[in-house]
Image 1 (spheres, rainbow, N blue to C red):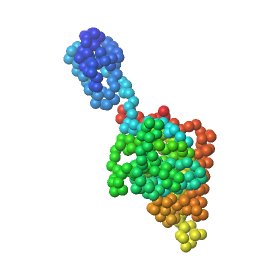
Image 2 (spheres, one colour):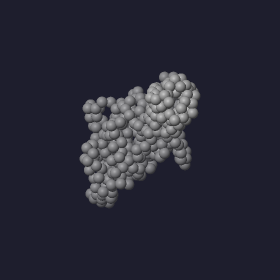
Image 3 (cartoon, rainbow, N blue to C red):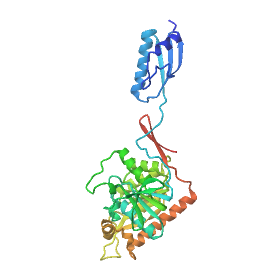
Image 4 (cartoon, rainbow, N blue to C red):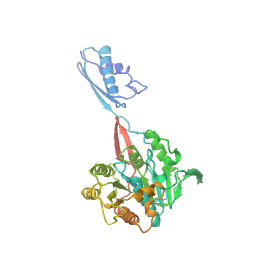
Length: 379
């Protein structure tokens, strides 16, 4: 039997493509039909990328042609998927914040390495040097910056800025601070999925009256996850600082943190690595150094990865005590801790200057999903 193209088209008009209101002919889903004697080739484009939709479409075409036209027809169905890219739950749109010159992300691959402590001391040291500084506590599930700045009981006020209601950051030690910790009770766990966390970050970033800042430090949560992508989608990050302790288990995660920022699709400049808890010096033996977690592991990692080594912070009881009482240790004058953080902060500032003079502006990234697989690409 010789098949007729018009008979095939008429049969296909009785089928509706999954997700479409019209039949596959009127909707334009069928792009071509070719017949050869008892053979027919149907080319069709659908928008639903799922395997179920593709299989359902193919089966309906086969059954309909066999029933309506010729039961022994040899049929080949070529299905092309043309699914539009859809944004993921991360709905923060990347754009710069007016008045903020440099945005520096402070990250760590592993929790418990003192990332927030380093962030707080970097911030107060920059402020002591005369810079205008802000800290955004982006660690949604474990905010600690309010405690470290002795502002845990404070609540941001709403102020009017050019006709819009904005949050006024809490300020202490010359540093402006915003954190999800201001909006939750001390004993309240933040049990949020990604969309809620992204929305909270969006508000703290863009609905805040940051004013003029030379540096906005972002205290990121540990690891390389959804919050990190949301932040990098939201903001053009000037550069990232990675904090690690010297032991191998922390260095392995720090290496992943560096790799995340260096991915071609993300491409946030890594300003360098800071080694925290580098060694222990007891108060009664100030000349002694005990390398409890290993010696210079982060320094060697920086050399291996060819990124700057920004300095080391010793394991000193007063740093922990200072953070607990809300007065960062770098505020203490004429101490080895102050000297250590001054050296590190100068190195960070130098790397920011070098980066701004030698590299193009960082773009915010766009995060999309296609056929169920996430992809990260530059805008």
